[in-house]
Every structure is written in C-alpha cells, then in structure tokens.
Image (cartoon, rainbow, N blue to C red):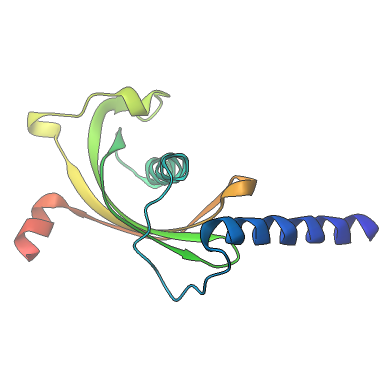
Length: 144
C-alpha cells in the first residue's frame, strides 16, 4: 500500500513539473496550435505510423511524408491532434526499416491524408491512439 501512494505522489509531481515547464500553470482551453518539440513530434509520429502499419491490411508499409498540422491539449497527459500525409513504401510488412524505405511510384503509388488523436504521457513513454481516419489523397482533392 505504501508503494502505491509513493508512485501516485511521484506521478503527480512529474505532471506538475511538466505543466509548469509548458506554461507556468496557464489555463488550457481545448486544443491549441502549439509547436511540438522535435523529440515529442518524432516519437508521436513514430508511434502513429507503427500503429497504422500494424492495423493495415496493405502488403506494403507506409511512412510519414509530411506533418500537415499539429495541435495539442494538456489533460492528464498530452493529447495531440495531428494531420499527416503518408505514403506507401516499397518495403513489405515484414521489413523492419520502414523509415528508410523509398516510396512506391507508378502503379503501386498510394498516398493518404490521416487525422489522428493520440494520447501520450511522454515522460512515461506511454502512447495510445484514440482516433484515426485516413482518406486517399485523390479522394481529398475531389472533396475540396
């Protein structure tokens, strides 16, 4: 029982430290256009693309081509709303080197625009995908 209280106290202290660093206890109201640190951006986008590839039925892996938009909201952790363009690579699903795979061209070329809500507790390296939806870039062009 003592160990559990100690862990909760440590977690609260770590959360307060993060909040103080991010905004000196400023009040957060919804999602804000705040730039992500390069470290948080890389780890969040890596988590996103790994989740996408793990849940995809495609024969080939996808990789992030471009971060289009990111918003953040402080809660018990950090929630990121990200819009990214991803592309199908030449590497098949069993490949481990998805970040260095060249993109498909010609017949197998495929790009998607994805909007995702990712919850993270970065200081604990915890990530969870709460929502994700993707459209082929051709469908996006037709819609607009």
